Length: 223
Image (cartoon, rainbow, N blue to C red; front, side, top):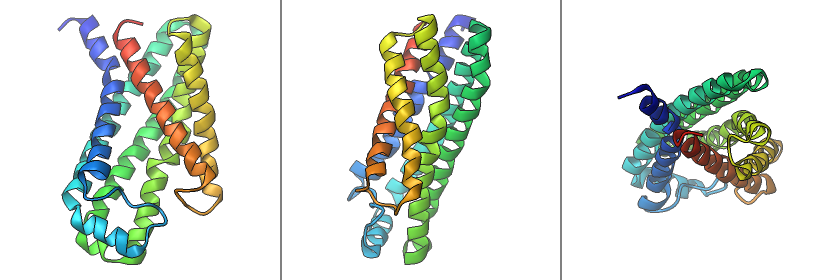
């Protein structure tokens, strides 16, 4: 394998991270008997979900661990790409690296929380499974989205300034950054799937994950 092919494979780890993330959700929400429990789900529903679907929850954890590792790979490539461009872009590289690594760590943490919730002894304890359920939402929600705003911001600025990435990717990233930062508001109120900030969090997740996937594909294609 030549150096160019290796670089393109490395750049494609972002797309791989999103594919693995989606695979985890497939098990946790679609293959399982019901969707992953809501934050305000009755204790009986939470207990039933984790007792009936331990294999699916373990698969969710497994794929999200792999997704976190792939995201780390992409973030290291992105910061190296920024360093190679020019001095102004190079200043954004540490910002992208710090935010991306933090997001990947929270993704790994959320996967570990899923795995703990799959244990029967945890599932039958209402207070414990509720606490871990909320923690899994926090780690897998704003814990990922808020720091991910930093590498998305760095890449979007470069898309606008240097024209090395399509302009639409810069606009997509701008929207993703705004939504990611605003999603931190979910920490201010009661945890609920029907809250305004939870809706913002969903928008942030969709926009930022699409940005990572598209940017990864573009960089792997030689952008």
